[in-house]
Image (tube, rainbow, N blue to C red; front, side, top):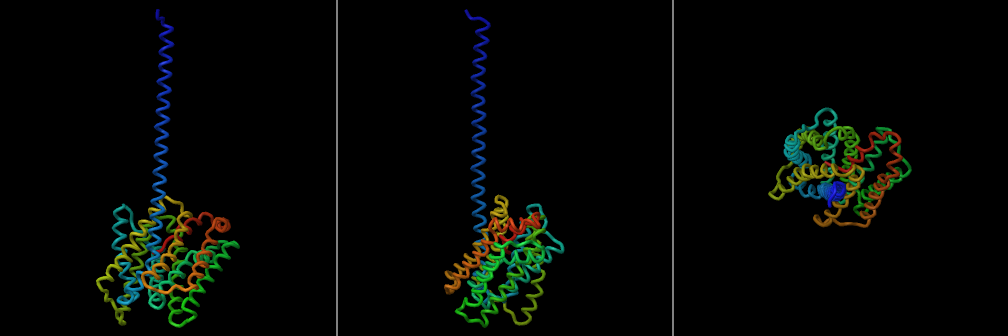
Length: 352
């Protein structure tokens, strides 16, 4: 005989079993979602790392791509053509994304420093020195940026940072003074011009700290390249009037497109993607690839000699960058202006 009590007990047991199965199913589904999200995050991080490696490898190759072009295109005209291509690539990308290029006084100043001065000095210097020397000298950009930030913004430099600065400058001096077997002359003038471009880049990064912190990076770069082109066009016209040349061969057109669309266009898209998925401090060390890629390509692609002094200089420069960028050095600098620290670390991972 089946009673109401037995029916009630059976129903309760059945309901309990169904409830347990439901809970296990729900937990399983949530666990699957968490695992899937974890896989997606790892995949995005891996893609971000690859994007930053590619961006900095492209930037590291620009000196080697520029050097051969200087035989058929004068330095100022080459810079103007490069950034005309860059503007034609970057502006449609920014506008299509629903944003506007950053315009105003600070982007204009950044265009003067980071485009006009940097590439006038860099191209003119590269015509007189080796791409190997130029790549290694450019490795000191992060350190010189810290020096200018300390002077202009009152940031405190700890013992580790000061040691890193001294080490990097010693590496630059070794490359400049002895990179060609102790010979100075015309090569030293080229190295000095490249070093001037590094100082201009450091000034650009310091000025751009608040701009990059407050605006989309691609929008800032689009505005900066536009202003830089405005400064370069009259300078290029004067150069041509004084006898400058613009006679690129068919192969040179590929190099020009690579510099404008690749180094000043695609590389920034990759860089922005990387920064969306990695912290600025994690992205900054990838800048150390620039001088290494530039030096390696100069030896392999251009057949430039690699002396022991180049190797010593690269170790000193990158060792100094590591000392200034390591966590203890960053922590000592944080005590003065912690709210501004991250934009600098972000900016030193890029070039134009």
